[in-house]
Image (tube, rainbow, N blue to C red; front, side, top):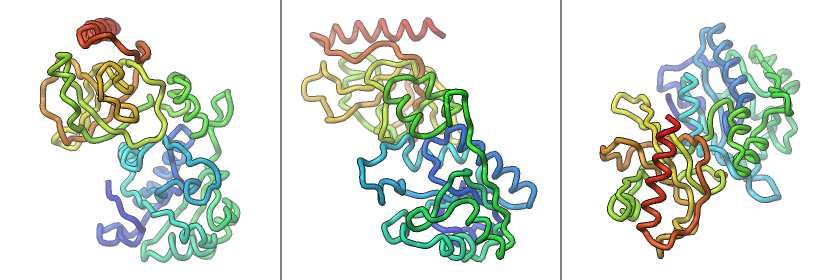
Length: 316
């Protein structure tokens, strides 16, 4: 999938006709996926490439007055999931204070239509707002696009029987450790994504269980503890291969001086001994096994890890 910071940059990639979906898409939950599905339909119907226009950082974290929104996905993770939805390109617009001040009309004329690329359709959530002080909505977007012969498709929200599917609900479910509820909202299991880094070497040396360590770029995690998990590792062909294993998330209270000031995320992949330092890894959270805790010795911790692994393996 192509990544750019403006639609105009797509000209150099041979793309001259696009259908566009606009939004932040944090979490890529079921409501977002409905928009992407409609984007794919419009792109096919108009012989255009499906392109997502999104923003980084989150607009509310630039113009909001409260605490920053803890994101469900890093930008790289969001783009990975969009690529899996067969999006041809993603335009990641830097959301600055200056950009927040453009009018709805300028967004259409300058951002969408000033690129030299033919835009056939724009898909947005039915409640999407844009432009300075959120002055634009789907109705105004249609009015502004009429003169450009661009079709606007407001996509209705998803109600899962417990309310409207939203990133806020997903964040709350993750933070509470309600991963089954989160899966229902997202339409997929919660996961984190990062590059495999070198840790302190205790997994293999002191505990006899090698781990792949990543620093997730998202801002919300479930409660610390041990989880069954799946490692999705990028392979040489650009695809992804799944490996079962067990995940530790926590602050390593048993290891003196190992507290990183924030949660460690590391995964022991079963029956796996390949060097994967520097490679991209997505870790998918499964069932919760137990809470994080301090042990009196590394030996006691190692014995407990053995029992945890046996428990996860027994679940299949």
